Image 1: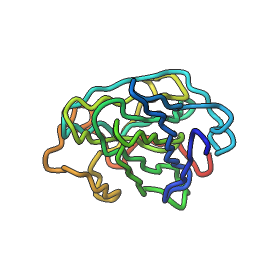
Image 2: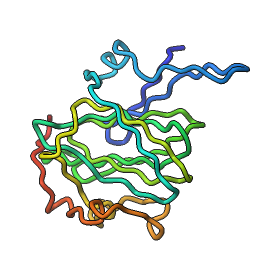
Image 3: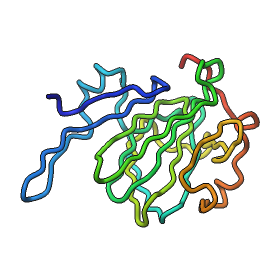
Image 4: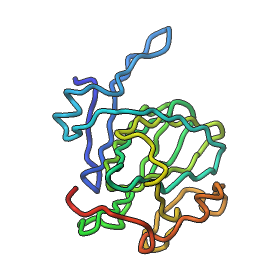
Length: 188
């Protein structure tokens, strides 16, 4: 069995990755990234920056992305706790434009989500002290930082706790997708 299993989701450019976990009396070992299987599964990117966030239960972070030429792919995993992680296709002309996919990522299920450039990303923490690790393909560029409103009714994300969402001031002011800065065209 391979160390990493890749599954394309309803929007096929978003890929759920399940690492093989090797537990023993000391804890566990798992691979989270390996160039060759990523390339053979259509993820031709290297990572140039790693970010970690800590969130209380109900916190919503997102929906974030960076404009071209600073477009950013993200490999997202949970080190502690549990989140509902979401990717929204914002590529104009895509058959999936404005659609979303969501998966639960947790320290227990070990799942990893690949979100390619051209997608807005966000999550809601389902447990206190949820720690999320993001490996990204481009460095953060504040001039090209952009966002879409987390509860845009035209996207219709089914958040686990929409009535309890805790947002940053920045995220609470994100525009609707139809009003957001966006220079992505399909295909990228």
